[in-house]
Amino acid sequence: MIFDRPHGVEAGQKLGRYLTALIDERRELKSDTDFMSILANAEVEGERLPEDVLLGFFRQLMNAGGDTSYHGFSNILAALFTLPDQLQLVRENRALIPQVREEGLRWGGPLTTTDRITMHDTVLAEVPMEKGAIIRVCIGAANRDESVWENPHKFDVMRERKRHLAFGHGPHVCIGQHLARMELEIALNALLDRLPNVRLDPDMPPPTIRGLLFRGADAVHVKWDA
Image 1 (cartoon, rainbow, N blue to C red):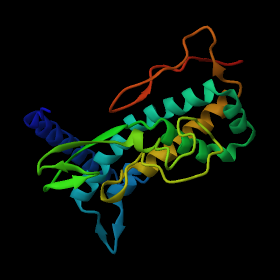
Image 2: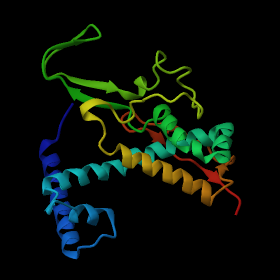
Image 3: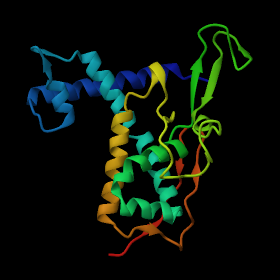
Image 4: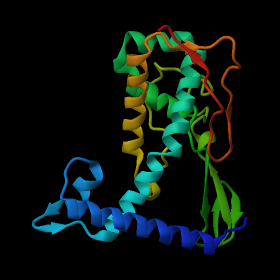
């Protein structure tokens, strides 16, 4: 595996300067009309949040509001639109949408693998690993573990709720998971509100979910009644 450190460092520095300028702008305007302004001007006992904390948080939110959300949403739509009985359950009971979201993240999580580097020699599942080894952990496989999930390859809105690993676990759990969940729930409600009879377009190819690291539907062709 090849890491392009110089360009990575350069990109990180440029993003840092861009976000710093936005924070300064929001603080000068003293606005409270948007999320970034609220955080930039927030005070606790007369002190603002440290700049490094703000920068780190905004960097994370940019990712949380991007790849994971739109890939996850496309996978949820691909499942619902190809399984009319599941879609009908949601149409009849919007309270199921949080459950749809979680099942979609389990069944078709937007991020299927993540890499880790071993900090010391170790053994996992009887496999020896040397210090410095690059380990690829397959989140997608864990979310379809037959010892945890009954009939794991089936998308089931009414599945018993259990914790999945779509956002990781432990000290490296995704810091943007709550934003991503909120975005998915809002997007699905908005779609069903505005296009109540939305459905797959039978004249177009059905959605195909592709990808290794980031995984999403190539397209979800739909039609609706005006």
